[in-house]
Image (cartoon, rainbow, N blue to C red):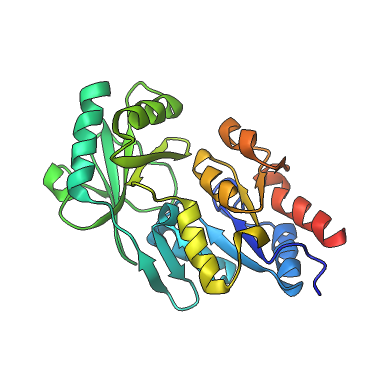
Amino acid sequence: MSPFPYRLVATDLDGTLLRADESVSARTRDALAAVTEAGAAHIVVTGRAVPWTRHILDNLGYEGIAVCGQGAQVYHAGEHRLLTSLTLDRQLAGLALSKMEAEVGPLALAASRDGLEGEVLMGPGYRAHPGPLPYVPYEDPAELWAAPLTKLYIQHPTLSDDELTRAARATVGGLVDVVMAGPGVVEILPLGLSKATGLSLAARRLGVKAAETIAFGDMPNDIPMFGWAAHGVAMGNAHEELRAVADEVTTSNEEDGIAVVLERLLSA
């Protein structure tokens, strides 16, 4: 029998598995390899849609199942194939946006289109994060709704991420889900969708139960995943909302926080 107490290790990407330069340290790679050797599976669970995740998984040599798009997409990295994909009801999303803008004023928008090659559209005024991730700018609002979407991104000129998330939930919480996934990243998702729903689907395919899972994350969108898993570990750099519900807090993503916990469990 494996001495490692879990059969599944679920890790978020940004702010958790990845360092700021999108690399994974040798120490963390070695720790994940050791738990795999001990009989556990490692699964990536990220808010990024597949097109923004695939290159990272390929660079890591990751060939298993990944949960992408806040749970909307279950992706087989080794086969470069979508196993499941859930889209946002565009009519409902449009209604939610109208209600939000009536409450807080105009929003800057971006959106992820569905599919392996789904583009990320960016509207006027949306502040893109620096880095290699591609955006396709649009001017005509009709372009936003022209093809199936996995999610919308919203930004406000003066409200903070936390303030915008709270206001959006209070206004349209019965129509869609609203999550904060990172700095400047507030997302509109299908109602009921979360990392927990995607992870549960992927775990079922692997024959693993929630009670056999340890999860690592750093942002409020990881809260449902922590609620599903047996043990939730917040990174040292985690948002206070996630730290409040975590079973433990490790060091930051820049300080090998995942490896610190896995090494301890492997040596217990």
